[in-house]
Length: 99
Image (cartoon, rainbow, N blue to C red; front, side, top):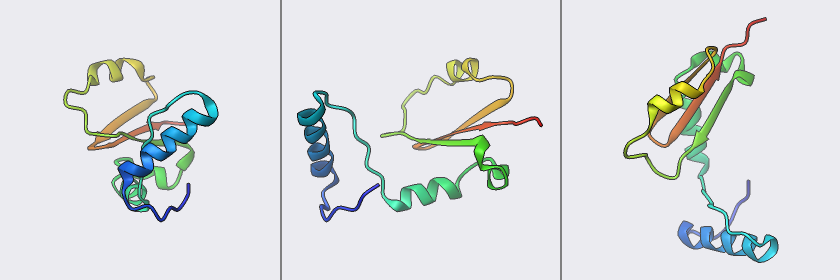
């Protein structure tokens, strides 16, 4: 996480990608998030039990909303103790922990 005076996120994304390419030899995809994006993801978490057992929850961020997400394949990849939810650009995974 960092703070930048650059307000143009497209320009900042390109600067970061270019610097990584220069220093490491590859150009990755870069996704910039505002603090509000992270706060929104926390507030919209569809698994309320995550508040009491946060080790079981994971959230991912997508660059854009998938036009045709392959939910059938996602469903086939999860274990019986897992469940997932996609809300706009947020992807959530919850795993039940059995003591």
